[in-house]
Amino acid sequence: MSDIIDLSIPVHPEMLHWGRRPTYEMVEEITETNPSEVSRWLIGAHTGTHVDAPSHFVKGGTTVDALPIERTVGPARVLDLRHVEREITAQDLEAAGAQGATRLLFKTRNSTDALTRNEKSPNWVGLGPTGAKWLADHGVVFAAIDYMTMEAPDHTTLWPTHVILCNAGTVILENANLASAEAGDYYLVCQPIPFEGREASPAPAILLPAR
Image (cartoon, rainbow, N blue to C red):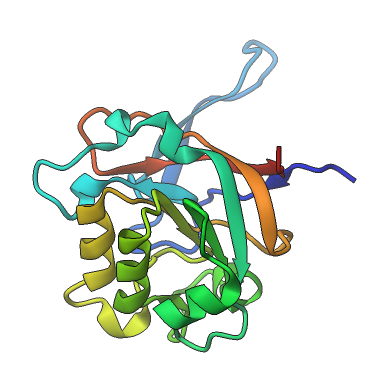
């Protein structure tokens, strides 16, 4: 069995998506006279497994192409938060062993429930404002969750978790498939597509054994 855990979810027109789903057209197809296939995609910056940069909620904040690679590559810790019903709190983070890690990935029941659906779940698990403040206060530079938003369901009007994390400079990874990742320490490699001047981009990500 491979020691590499792929966190990326497939991109396709019927996928789970906040807002407009991706579409594509075939520009070229293999025929007797044409040797190759070429497709053209229309996708949003927040499609699939993607990174939110601080500029997503901070005017003039760091854009996705300017994120320091040291924030998205390095030692990381997966926390088992599958018992959380709706909102991850500061107390939940401490109880799960978040102390001392600067890159955290939240494995919740989303990985085997909300993330597997093609339509938005009414009851996903997200990070609450107290959890976001804990991350900011403890110098966490990267946080990932297994759903299309880091925000908890009850806060998608003012988006306090995003506001706190973006103002702290914390990189957010959303739609991370953590179903195969056990709680513990790993080495994270996440490489956002450098959309110049933009607030987000698709970001293939993998976990390797801890170094």
